[in-house]
Image (tube, rainbow, N blue to C red; front, side):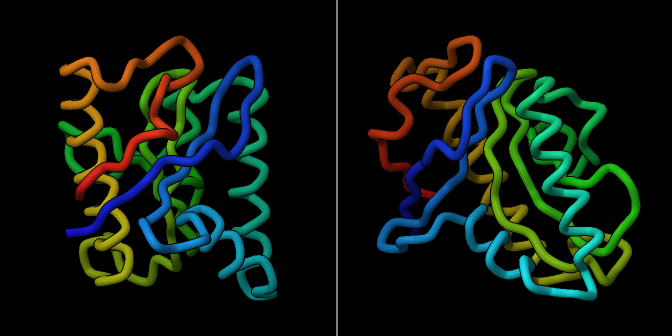
Length: 158
């Protein structure tokens, strides 16, 4: 079983971006994604599209139209970019104002399920999405308009 924490990445009037970090690791999943692809010349265009999408989300809000649906119908897992490309960043769209970024990678098959790496990132987010819903229902975590109160002080067991 793995334990994760949630970290604030950035906040604007329109949106708040969080990421998850596995306990015992210094680098969050979103930071791992950024570091993994920032110097990849072959994927530079895809990487830039994702960074621009994140900026647009912070400027405008976490609207469904910015994401590619992923995961299952019952979860909040989605991916950037909405357009074609090889690179995917998997996220949890909590509301029109709250996004939790995970990790991602190169999509070389038709679906993420065909890649052990991508499937792992999606499954981690699906598990966390379920745990977060339970925490919200129980009241141990509260979703406000643009933020999740007390989430950064909690540790969640996946």
